[in-house]
Length: 156
Image 1 (cartoon, rainbow, N blue to C red):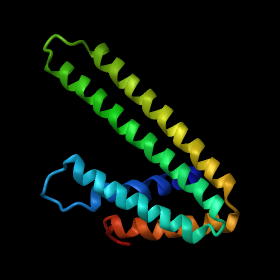
Image 2 (image 1 turned 135 degrees about the vertical axis):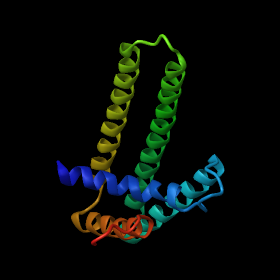
Image 3 (image 1 turned 30 degrees about the horizontal axis):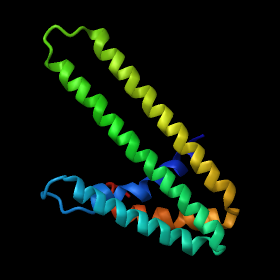
Image 4 (image 1 turned 45 degrees about the vertical axis):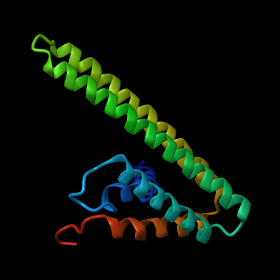
């Protein structure tokens, strides 16, 4: 389970980490910066797929799965923002009961779990499409790309 979770995170991180790290810090977090960074991440991921998967038809299918994952991540992000807006509004209500917060948090967590389950299914769909060597090559390339965008941890 731990390996599966790490692989899922690797796929998502490679595709989306650039959204947070590629922009110039201090210049705002406008959606145009995030979209541009996301597009760069998708382009980079597609290039990794092309390098790892030599069969053009399989590569095309793998890139379609990447697009499906990206679409789900975008939808999940939008949904999370909506739940947070509900929490902000509820927080402003002096008379709000704890149960009201708990309901929103439960809904938020259930939505996140549903999204994560869908993404995990897509990950396994991609894995079943590729050979063990193609999968190893792709995940290795994604690990290298992710390490360029992740902050260095102390002691490592």
